[in-house]
Length: 218
Image (cartoon, rainbow, N blue to C red; front, side, top):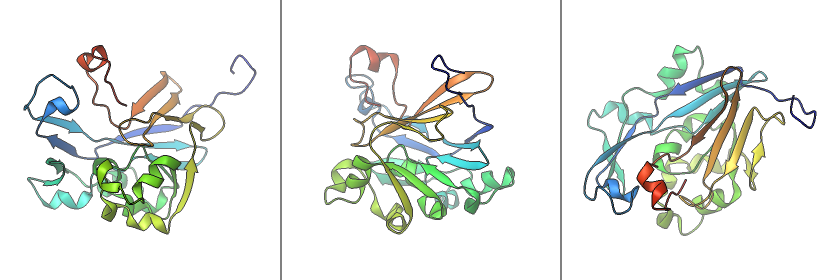
């Protein structure tokens, strides 16, 4: 119970799914002025949540078709995507199919976050309005988007978000607007029964150096 008397909920379950890895050729893109020219490998997790009888997915990872390519593939801006295990296989381990996912929350539309959008077109998608406009706008290239990965969302049910969203109205799942990395980038804040609040940023590329130089872009 919160100070204002509102009931605070918690997630029933939370699973971390391996959405692949992105190998960037220049680490300094994420830490300006440091480690220029050094490659860096970035994990691309997706998060599966159970709440109020609903299965909710935060991001979808890299296109699982890359699991058939052992060395992966360069997809955008010289960044190589690698998938060790399809996300559908990981869902099957939990006893689920893609069609069981009722809602998808999208942090942003880069390939390592929206790569499996086609698997979840029956779900209701929650996307920041500014992100959605950029995804389907004429200038999508300047934001690093790959429309072929999400073209099916044009026929999917999409709920557009303006700012923050308390998904279930009980503080168990909150979408927090954090623009900068992309026009409508957002982050996830969940409440867990045993550990309290936990935050996941769509693009967690921050190091202590990044914070110190004041250029952290969530």
